[in-house]
Every structure is written in C-alpha cells, then in structure tokens.
Length: 288
Image 1 (cartoon, rainbow, N blue to C red):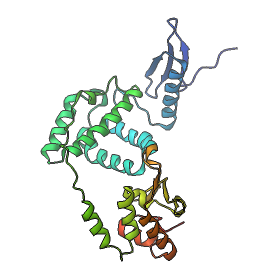
Image 2 (cartoon, helix red, strand yellow):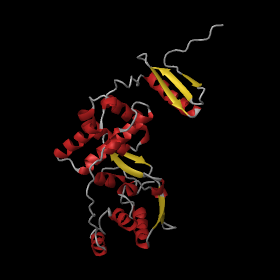
Image 3 (cartoon, rainbow, N blue to C red):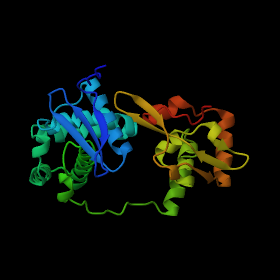
Image 4 (cartoon, rainbow, N blue to C red):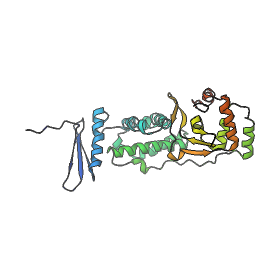
C-alpha cells in the first residue's frame, strides 16, 4: 500500500548518520526550513512551534519578515503570555511608539548594529532620557533573543550595541525625625494606617494596596505579602503575584502598627473606595 504523503506544514523528524537529529517543515511559501539538534526533544519542540505558527497563520518566510511584523508577533505570542500586566503595558507602548515606527520597515535579517546605534542616538537627540533609551534597548534585545530561538536570525545584533547608561542618582530619604513628623501630622487622616504600614514595613505601594485582612495576622503581629495591586491602562486595577519569589515574604509588625491596624479593622472607616479614589487602584486594604 502506498504511504500517505505528508501535507505541507506537517513536517518530519529524522536522525542523520552523524547522530544529529533533524526536523524539516515546508512553509506556506513553499520554502523548506530545517532544524538540526543534538537531541530529539530540541528539534521536536522547534517543529511543534513551526506547526503551530503555520496553523495560526502567524508564520511567514523569515527572509522577508520586517522588524515591525516580527515585533507585533513577539508582543502577541510572547509578551502577552509571559510578562506581568504592567510590564506588558510598557512593552506595548514603547514598542509601538518608538521601535516599530523607527525600525519597523527594515527586514529582520537586514537589521544591523548600526541601525540600533543610530536609533539610540536619534532618541537622545530628541531629548529622551538615557533611562528610556536603555529600556528600549532592553525590550529590543529580549525580542531579538526570541528571534534567534525561533531561527529567524542567526545572531542577536543588539549584543553588539552599547546602550547609554543612566547616571545613578541617590534618592532623597526622610530622616527619622522627618518621618515621625510626617506621620504625626496624619494621625487624624483616614489614610493614616496605610502610611504607617508603608513607613513601618518598607513594603511597596502596590503590596500595601493589595493587602487583604486574610494576609494580616494581628495576633501574631505579622503580614504575609502574597499579591500586589497596580493600575493598567484600559484594564483598571489588576491584582497579580509579586514580581519575584523573594517578594513573597512575611513581615513582623511593630506594636504601634498592630494597634493602628486593630483600630482600623474594628472601625471599618477605611475601605476600598477611599484608597481607590486616592491611589487609582481597587485596593483591598480593609476588605476581606
């Protein structure tokens, strides 16, 4: 019986006489793509990605893919599923405001370090900060690293470009006396428990705004940091996990803060609406 002919986009895997594994797939354009690897899993994973891209219609011949088309795919297929909502928002904004308009028409395979260097210089000339340009470089570097993993380019050209380094600034900090004076002036303010929590624990604003009473053990005088609250454009307030595993932690509370939080919990005077109006987030401090 005649063997079934493989359809375009299905692909195949085999092992060569030299021991290398090989996967091959035919793109919609008719061009064949081949991947070599030391393990079967390596080439199988690559083939699975190519098959998915073929089915979804998101793959095109990398010879003609522009930087703009690639970045749009990167935002949709990687950024949208791997980064925190706030980081997704900044990646989308900066990519569509700066990277795609300036570099988008260049073919991905034709992108050179000189293109990036000229782009960074132009942004600095437009009086964007070194920190902004450094962030643009970081986004582009990560995107091009993904292009390398997808076998769309042989190397990451951003490796050959030095992004400007912002000068380090030492943040201005309140002295102990200034901090105590500040808190003393807020004792009658409904947000006093929030400020006292910030000053007493060193927690980030998003961590405090993400607190629930289930995270606060007043009997044991401890707060468990398990989530954060942040505002994302068009999505409103988003509750997410802390950025790193180290950020998930327990914090011992000073007695003054325990007293203030007990009074706050018993009075119920500070609720979601007050914090949301003040900080633009649907904080759950005072909620369940």
